[in-house]
Image 1 (cartoon, rainbow, N blue to C red):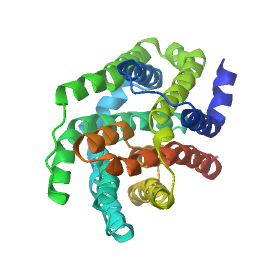
Image 2 (image 1 turned 135 degrees about the horizontal axis):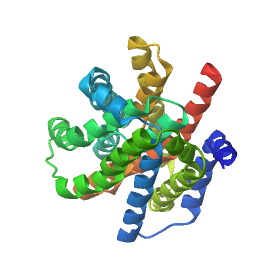
Image 3 (image 1 turned 90 degrees about the horizontal axis):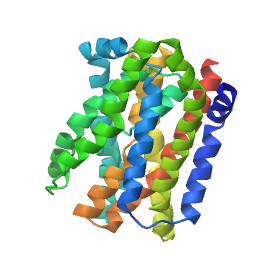
Image 4 (image 1 turned 90 degrees about the vertical axis):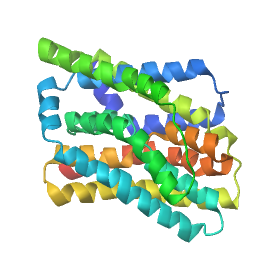
Length: 310
């Protein structure tokens, strides 16, 4: 099973593209059951990833939060500002599209950054701390950011968000790290074998479900193609600035990997909910199209790291 897991990991980019393609041609109607399935799949992936991480190492990073705070400054200041400026320059007459790019860049760090950090042998405890801190900060920062830039007040269902993130990140992470410290190598063997294979299947399922709920309903035309190009640029910029910011303060490969995926991955589902609930479909289009590039760029970035540091 370890060989199968390694084979799947090496071809993760192909599975991402396959999941996106399946999602495009197999549309699904929004259903609460699908949301619960995604939460369960995320929780399992987080659990198996945490089986390779020491709880003591996690606490060590929490006690010295300089790197996570530095990364979150990039995530919630540099990237949203750049996306907002690009939106104004390229779409000067379309305020809703500008808002869409802003929201898509200001939403919390994507939980899948943990999975990619694990796949590319990054600093998983650092990635976990970044996601955990952002879980607390993003619901506070995002409404203020939009109020300051757009002048619109939004409200977020904090209890619902906290409960979902609790089951997707907090509980499975703590359980996995404690089992790692208790069982040692046995836990890692499961994560790198049968458990890892199931985790890759769960990863495919998450991308498929999210893409099939959005991509089939986009009507293609000149405006959409223009948005696609800008969305690709902003997505690539997120990964690039994470690398530059990482190299500016450290030469440690694992730390740079975690910073790159933390700045490149966004919680697209949260952005779509905010855009459709408080603005309009047009504002949600740039966020939905970001899904076309976020995972493929993550896979492409993994190839770069494998080539550059192998």
